[in-house]
Image 1 (cartoon, one colour):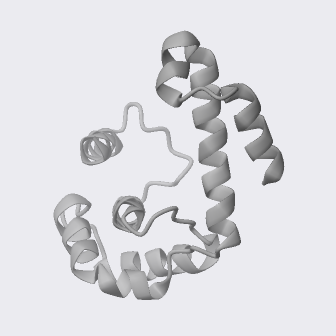
Image 2 (tube, helix red, strand yellow):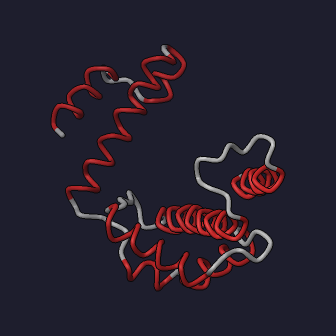
Image 3 (cartoon, rainbow, N blue to C red):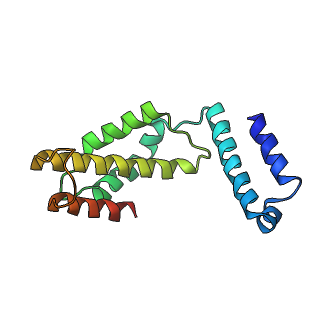
Length: 152
């Protein structure tokens, strides 16, 4: 962590980020990147991980997102998707930098789990293997369009 601080200070050379952005954009973005890495390291050191309690706090939002954004033609199994989300949170050790960031992280993960569950159930119901190419398969092409619209 100290090496990142040293690198950042060496690049800034006493200048503010605003001055750095005007003088040398490449260095400015390098400092931004190093600062993000430093923030991530600090969060891990402080053990700032998204927990099951955070999921409970945002349960209503998670259910709404999954039911209204990820349910492709009724293929979503909400219970399975919620279980998958819980497993992801418990196994991946998702780090948050600020408390305000938790809502966005959970929302993104809920949408990912909901879409994956919908696709999995769609494939099982239609006898489509995971190795099947999307191109030329109208069911998978429709779902791909749905996925893109949901993620945008």
